[in-house]
Every structure is written in C-alpha cells, then in structure tokens.
Amino acid sequence: MSLETLFDFLEAGVSRFHSVAHALTLLDAAGFLPLEEHRPWGALVPGQGYYLTRNGSSLAAFRMPRTLEGFRLVASHGDSPTFQVKASFPPAVGVTRLEVEGYGGMILPSWLDRPLTVAGRAMVETVGGVEPRLVWLDRDLLIIPSLCPHFDREGAAGRKLNPQTDLQPLFGGKDAPALRAIIAGELGVAPEEILSLELTLTPRQKPVVLGAEGEFFASPRIDDLECASTSLEGFLTAAPAPGMANLWVMLDNEEVGSSTRQGACGTFVKDLLDRILLAAGVTGEGRYPILANSLALSADNGHAVHPGHPEKSDPLHSPVLGGGVLLKLNATRRYTTDGVMEALLTRLARQENIPLQTFYNRGDIAGGSTLGNLLQHSVSIPMADVGAPQLAMHAAVETAATADALALEALFRAFYAAPLPCRGDGRYGVL
Image 1 (cartoon, rainbow, N blue to C red):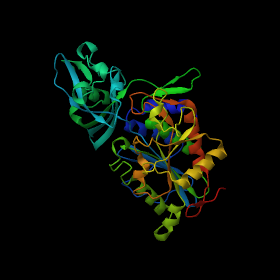
Image 2 (cartoon, helix red, strand yellow):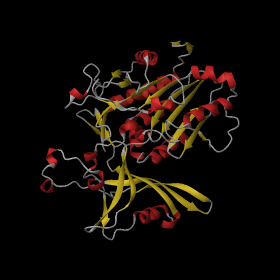
Image 3 (cartoon, helix red, strand yellow):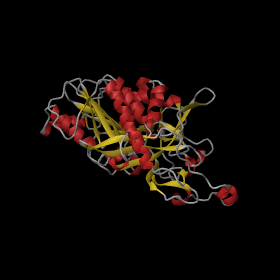
Image 4 (spheres, rainbow, N blue to C red):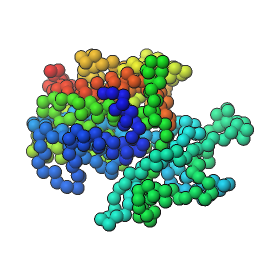
C-alpha cells in the first residue's frame, strides 16, 4: 500500500456518504459486482466479488468462495465527529450563520478559525421518484470565528465553549443566498426538488506528511478512515485462505452509538452473513460450524501516548507513534479482544514481522468503546479490536504515523490470508 492510496481515501471521505462512494470506485475497479437488499440474489459465482450498501452510508464487500467453511471479517466505520447542519439562522448583525449541532464527541476548539464547507447527501424528487445525490461544496465556504481575548478575559483560563452560541459557523452577509439554493445550483435541480438534506461540516485541510523524515501525517478523519482504507487495501490484495469468505465492512454511526439499521447495532452484517450462507446452500445445522470457524477484527484507531501528557496513558502499556499496530484490551469488554484472539494475532504478527503494541487504558480513566462489542450482539464470531495509534483523536485535524498505516495494512492482509482453522473451543491450527 502507498500513502497516496490512504491520502486519497482521507481526502475523498468528506462525509460518511462520500466514504462509501470512494470505496465503491475502488471495488468497481477491482471487478466487484453490486447486489441489492430489495432483490433476490440467486446464485452467486464462486471467486466473484460482490458489494452491498445500506442507507448509502454503510458498505460491505465479499468474495464468494468455491466452498464455504468460514468467514474472515474486518469491520471499520466511515463516520467521524463533526457538526450536522440544521438550518440557516435569520440574518443578524449584518451576517448569516448556519445552525449546527454536534455529531459525536469533538475537541471543540480545534474547529475554530479554520476554513470549512459542507458535504453529505440530498434526496431529490425526479421524474422516476426520489433519488439520493451526493453534496460536496468544494470551496472555502464557512468559518467558526472565536471570540477575541479583548471580549473574553476569562477565555485564557479555559472558558467552556457553548455549542449554541460559540460554534455556529459564519455563512455569508445579510443578503446571502439560501444554502439550499446553492446546493440546488450545484446539483442542477430546482430548490423545491430537494426534499431533504443530510449535511455535515468538513475541514478544508488536505492530508499532509509531517516530521523531520516524514514520520507523521495529519488529516481530518484519520479516525476511522485510516482503518477503513488500510483494511480495504488488505482485503483487495490478500489471497483468501481455502474455504474462507473474506468480508470487508465499513459501518455508519459509530461516533453516535451505532444504534441505527446501518450501524453495528443493526442487522446489516448479520443479514449479509445469512444471505451468503443461503447462496452457498447452507441451511439449518450447517451454518453453526461455519460461524464457529470464523474470525473477525474490529478496526478502529486508539490513543498514542501524548508527548506532553504521558501521565494520561497506562504506565506499562503506552503505545507510541511509529511503534506498530495496536491490539486493544479492556477488562470491562469495551474492546472484544480475549486471550484466544490475542494469542492468534500475536503469533500472526510475529510470523509476518509486523510490529504490534498492546493498548490498555489507565485504570482510572475510562476509555471509549468501539463497534466490535456492539457488533457481537448480532454476530457471534471470535473477534479482536485493533487499530493504529494516533494523537488528537476527534479533533478537526488529527495526527498519526506513516509507518503504522503500512503495518496496519500488512496485518489486515495477513489476517485475510491466514487459514487458522478451528480445532475446537479455543483451539486453532496454524497452517
């Protein structure tokens, strides 16, 4: 994998809908064929790759094996913390602002005083019915101005930002055209033909390489498009183990709890597994050995030790930028990794010479969860949580290491190719 591939994904994924659209271009180029949930699938061709979307914001792809003996699944997410556009404020004090509300937990000050725009989806009325259209106003359009220190003497002491008063973006002058009218012009439709808009703010910064020797990179949306991109690259380039159906999944709404039909708490992945089993002629008792012979990874980035605040990390498990892939563990099972999966991934990484770091949160600092433990409510497959270390998670622009992205992609490729047949409860062969 080249960094260019990752940077293309980071730059293209300006909304969760655009993340899916960009991944679809890569799957199309690799010869994958589309499937639709609302249509019968019939026979699927062994060796052929297929993909499926739900809500235009979640995407799954798989290769149909000649004989189905198990699944290899890697799941990431395509959404990132941002602001969702609600409406336009009436003009006041000579300017027009957009009204927004938070989507996910953000480092709020990082969104101040930087060029922003909007991206997302419009539902448009057409002659044939209602259709989705991607929206991306590719220009510097918005800014959230901070309050200057002359008016904010206590700000230097850490005044808390109020989302309703401090974080509404400046859109234009008092006579600015309506945002809907601008979008209608971009789409080539009348404003009244736009029936709904799902728009979020996105920073205008492109991915850049940093550091004395190019050790780091900075970009919006590293969490979690770094995992989405590297796992897709591993999926596309790995030779599947005999009898394994390799699956790649990018889910929506992880940053707000995953409790949607297109999120990890929905049935998207379960429905997909069920339909692949049916297409392979597997019913009844036959499905259970196949699921027991399956393995999965929940792919979401984790925290590197902050150079200015090492006290925030566990003193014995402080992963560093450039130190390799994170294997994430947690006693309360916010991460899915257990001893069996830790052993399998440790051996796989050692065999492939892939650097691996163990990540725990400090005992007195609760960490965030990810999609793995939620996905296991409907998909009972042995699973581990992995990711890359990064800094400034949930900031408008985040920082990670170039070497870790390459290591992460290598781990995914090795995982997709590894046979690792189940020999019994907690016992696996290593072929």
